Image (cartoon, rainbow, N blue to C red; front, side, top):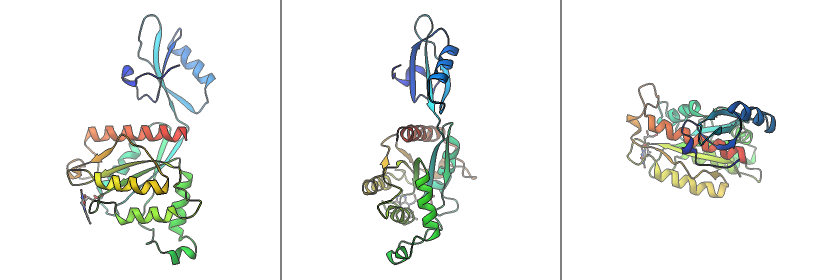
Length: 243
Ligand SMILES: Cc1cc2nc3c(=O)[nH]c(=O)nc-3n(C[C@H](O)[C@H](O)[C@H](O)COP(=O)(O)O)c2cc1C
């Protein structure tokens, strides 16, 4: 088995590509099913290459990776919330994305914290702890991240048992502006250092000119953007599978 360039095997969304000799695709499928952990799902085999029965295929981990997503906008018709909903449809097979609404989380106050975490905060922290990975979707407010997102992260950052520490995470941003929230993303990455979030570096997903990329129902109609979100989620699931 060896890693090969996934582009050599176009039909597949490759996380791990196999390059093996076997009498048939069925034989490879059979041996993988027997030889590998049952949590690994075979998505497809084929892409015949070379003489004889040299086959290239792929396997995709599907151990039920749980992603928790939250958006830094409370606006009803938020583009960022819409992008997060869209991501729910674009997660790879075997993973699922649950959305947490940050609206009920109160403003951080150490006096309140001293009385114990408010219920919405406790729920948020538990949901993070239970997730294998996080997806943060944020607008840019005045070149930075909105207070609603920073506030939620501040609550989750507290204590030696912060559920954020070490968590694989990905970022997307949507903005009506031309830069798609790039400055907010880099501020968020800076915050992620102290939180010990394990942010993916790429692909970077900036949804610029968001007003033209979503329809009246809040559906993301821009296919290149859907594709890059798909790639981000694949990379996140792959990262979470290694953690
Ligand atoms: C207080 C405030 C500050 C903003 N600052 C920026 C900014 O710095 N850069 C930017 O691209 N858009 C900025 N915007 C515009 C947002 O991109 C736009 O309102 C976007 O729709 C917000 O995301 P949402 O649709 O998810 O609520 C700002 C909006 C608000 C309300």
